[in-house]
Image (cartoon, rainbow, N blue to C red; front, top):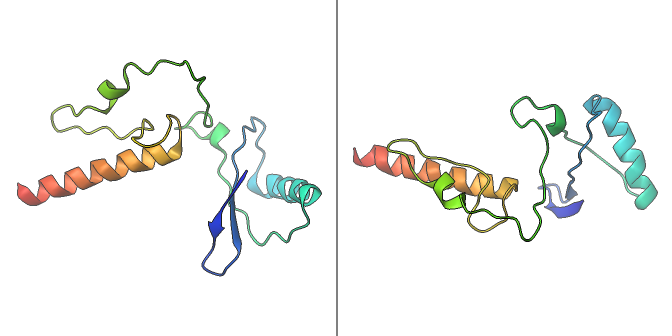
Length: 121
């Protein structure tokens, strides 16, 4: 878990990741999450937003951590353009693989390339 700044209303924005294979429902897991947080630190939880990555049909799981000696010899090839197809994946430029930040970064760059090329053609 990590603090991730403040909301526009000045409340703490808190981002958490888990690997809950038994994700029930946001409502049920929300109650459990709030109770667990209050065991760590007394706090008022105003709102929670959930996404069940472990049951997401597209993600088919949650984030992962690779060991330091893991090989990414095909990382560059997986980011190369294939004619008019651009790839935006989690192999970001400034962060480790499998982080959403890398996917956002690569997606933003691909969108910028598409916008630039569509203006010049």
